[in-house]
Image (tube, rainbow, N blue to C red; front, side, top):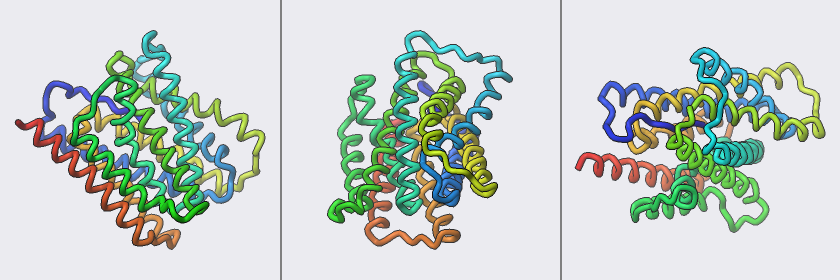
Length: 299
């Protein structure tokens, strides 16, 4: 997922902000559908699901590179960051897919949505960006909310939640490297392409070793998961090109609401009271940080 902004030094216009919000809402809806299609594809191995999700996205990612003539070149100073972005992004994706199969899709989505808070922490180590007190407060709040979802006192039952938590960590670390590459001048579509390619190459041998024949229904579900993911990635890229994260990132949390609705309507999933408390705490932390960033930028 690429998060770049052309508004590092100026605020977006009202029209740009509204368009950015529309893009990020479309992205959230499509990512929710991605998790839904992964879940209903059945008892296929996680690596098989991850491969086909990225294989479809890879072909879609090639189109803008060819159309715009961007090319496939990686900036010399960004090569290490590109590799680490792909590594953490792919392992985080695999963890998220495994969690989707073992948790309710709303729980899995919310744990994955801890990624912005992990990005705050990892940006300190990767780019020496020092979080302020409000950033740390929001991180502590978010992880407190995560404990309600993980339920650490339940022993082995919390293992899928811990794997889902790593999914959020992997994604957050990947976003930090995306941010670094943006500052190094690496085009966004190239990052999307290499992430999809790397994910396919990494999961391919595991998929072959664990291969399980698919029905047409399962293949269709994974193709739809890949299409949904690709649409989501390009929309979130467009959103962050129009407006900065502090203005729109809070709207990305609607993915959890969309996922909960899909889980309730089609999978009869009803999160327990502890999960609802966790959702509320994490979403409050996101809204608080967004509102603080908005007011600070206006001063």
